[in-house]
Length: 74
Image 1: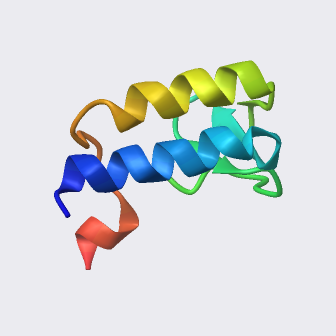
Image 2 (image 1 turned 120 degrees about the horizontal axis):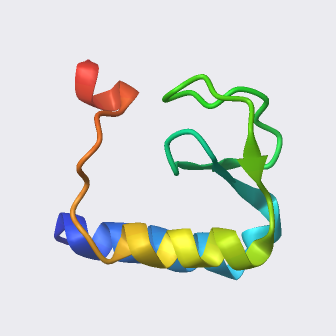
């Protein structure tokens, strides 16, 4: 499975349960609804509307990763 397929699969899963996620307003990452601080940019402002989560999942799922994540630093 290529990275883009994996990202698309993750995006579909997130979109299917959009009410379990929210979008960080600092860096546009998608995080769990229970998250208090964004693990990537430490922002505490989020948009939890399902419409925003679905749109962001579709956007992120359609392109290559261009941000550094914690797993990239290991």
